[in-house]
Image (tube, rainbow, N blue to C red):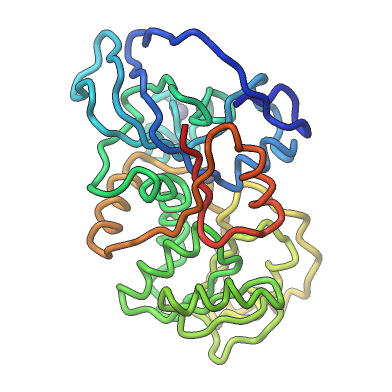
Length: 323
Ligand SMILES: [Zn+2]
Ligand SMILES: [Zn+2]
């Protein structure tokens, strides 16, 4: 399923099956999660996508062919392919353990073809083996889980954690946080009682509207909804020294707010991309915490429908495409 131009629906296209070039794997896609970032690409909210592009970066698949010079992968092996598709290895960020900020990266589904397809080529160095589990249920771990985990770590060690926007990422992190004994406060759109019930069922101690004041001040909050107006609200909900982490790649403008909301060493941070280290760490944690994702599966040809359901907030959990 191909995006020719932002703002247009994806169209189905037949292409010859490629041979993997040196260093790459040809991966037969078993499932590909639908991430909000895909929506930002399709809707033209992210600059300079490579066009035409096949979206999708939460890919679970099996190695179909191995390019020259690739070690450690065999045909038939199940692997995950995430957002991060390539880093230069030589820039200051790559050399200091921050490849998520690489100056010359490639991202699946944005600047390199992704997983809304039957097959995808991926640089083997950015693929990894997956723990046990069903293909569709593992897919959302590959971005909602991984980048969610990076946001979660940045939120610090506090025990009272707010999650603004209870979609794919929050429904995974709520389970990890509850497993670690933290108190999760889930904030949703006003009146979205289904998401609030869902949050409570996954271990949140409280769920309410994002305008509501939680019953205790928070140590940290993570904002997953792409809504800039949540930034001052979250700052008002964290205690002294608290952190507010913006976990998304795109957000509407942040309204101006009084300095007192940041005063007393409150911190506002953003999270960009992921490192391979995040992936290894998180997949281990998710397995130990027994994370179970809730998914709605769509046939690949229904990708536009899945994107529309995500855009309109009609999903509980995560959408997954099955080729
Ligand atoms: Zn680099
Ligand atoms: Zn994503």
